[in-house]
Length: 129
Image 1 (cartoon, rainbow, N blue to C red):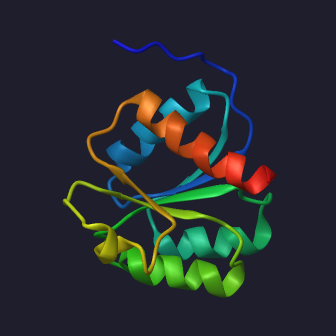
Image 2 (image 1 turned 90 degrees about the vertical axis):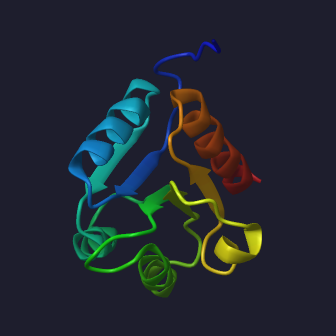
């Protein structure tokens, strides 16, 4: 089992998932790692918060949501800020050509804390360069 260092992350993460238990669990994982997390079960409320909140470093979104799917959400994010990486979180097996046009990365469900940390670190490192 791989160990992780709690509380060493820094950055603002936006999570969007219509399933509140998934949202709460993912939020707790990221907060345990030291990240500041804003979570929404509604893609529209997440978009509204993007306009009014602390700058976001990375966004994780579910793919299959009733109000607005992850692709529509990612495109709406791009209209607000093209610089924020949007990562799709999905339990579906997606080939790169399936997700690449709309998202900057993919995180497969189920995932471990270390998987989440690695994905955030990957995009924060890109942002710093």
